[in-house]
Length: 379
Image 1: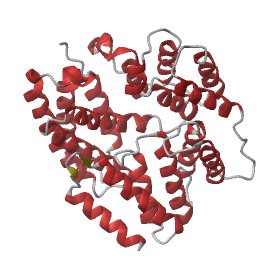
Image 2: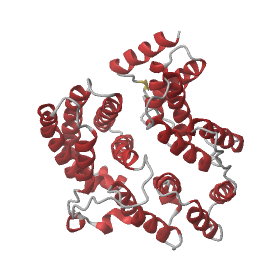
Image 3: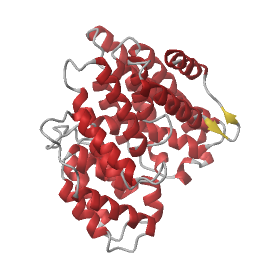
């Protein structure tokens, strides 16, 4: 099978930018060998992560395990180097290390599907970073990946996600729309990739094109899709056409809270996706609000809490996602605020769920300590 190093190379590019410490070039140089090792390990296993069958072949087991261990070891080094840096960098490094370690543990335990999940979480960390802000124009990130990419092996949704990760947002949306409106989309792919969420994040949070997203979903309604999918599409189109306007007096935080209430009103149960449009739009407002200077600490804490609520609906219910970081920041900034107890309960639930399996809850010592530290703060 041809090696396709895009995944590793893109992660390297993101990490080299994201983990640039404040302490100067000397410290930054310390990151480089670990970044190169991570890149190489991801490059080596990338072709096998594209399908469960390829990933679970016995012939590749040694190669995959060795490279996952390299990934986990160097992610641990990066986490220690980033520990003294600002919270955002520290969080990214911790998330990278935790997911890499879990990938190794799951693979060694014979749980290939779960190992793939945690590798995907590493990928999603990169993608989240690039889609967390508005961008009307594609990036000038013009490294020539084309000659190295096995586009056929990546599949349509793989190509779309690659384009998003490399900040070629317009092309990514075009690719999603091409797949949606063709006969290429299968139920299996819908379940595996959850492409509608990625597409909405691009169209609503990054490109700010509500009309375009609504038009695409209206076209999809005429296709023979499962009833639950059509129900979601119908709800999303209706939401897109009646998004409440932001008043001149409203802050981004106040407006986001209004959107979150609208999202919750449409959700009949925790994983109901009908309110997803409002959750994504709320996250956009909240991320924008956090970029302002001199936000009162209490307001900043509340913003992180609301972001956690939004992310729980947008992303994975497991604490490996962004919601855990947002809840933790809310607690540390305002431990005695009323919402901090709620944030802790959600953090704890997600953490225990994320580390649970057929053998029970296998919570690492570092996570136990983090959980107890947060518990002490809110009690």
